[in-house]
Length: 258
Ligand SMILES: *[C@@H]1O[C@H](CO)[C@@H](O)[C@H](O)[C@H]1NC(C)=O
Ligand SMILES: *[C@@H]1O[C@H](CO)[C@@H](O)[C@H](O)[C@H]1NC(C)=O
Image (cartoon, rainbow, N blue to C red):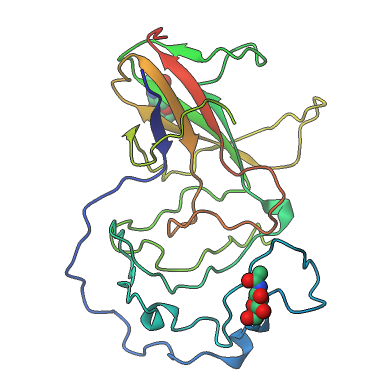
């Protein structure tokens, strides 16, 4: 049986078309403050003597106004995302927002289903068919329990940080549209103590989150992944490229299928 994709994060709901009028009587200014201009965007990155320049790199597109009108000026005239989950494609002009320090990067570990109880075995975990189970994930660096309306506020505000923190396996490429279970984990879970590799209890706060797979799954082979997101559903934007992944996936077997 083909692997099925079992993602974990938010529930797709129908997109509402008629929006209420905006609540603000004094709208925010619509011009770009000079203090907001990111001069790094003026450069392609391939100008002579640019740090990090090497063969194989591409030119970046450039802007002297933070791409403020990127969407409306785009030759393909894409519709604005405007808080909606537009399956036919769209353009989002909301800033990316705040990026955490590398000390506060997100990291996830799926602890159930697990590859096996003896951690080095390549065998997948076996779950009885059609029996309810919890997907249990440990997450550090995440202030969990904040999720805005996915129908009206999808990518509609920048990624932000809480006050405290600002501180190839398998041969088949799975179709990300093909999944059997999807759950937005919108509660804060419980804090747990993490034991480090040397048996020490680290000072890092780790939260345990659960998503119950009610009724269980038909027999088969599955993959379950975490997809950590900002409150406005953006994939989390991390401060450095070279890091451990913020998400985790495990493969498991339901009902002893082969
Ligand atoms: C980058 O843009 C410059 C200026 O247009 C051009 O001379 C150069 O060939 C471009 N480099 C690449 C890798 O496309
Ligand atoms: C899943 O976890 C929730 C929250 O801890 C708990 O209430 C529920 O009983 C668990 N379900 C199973 C099947 O263990």
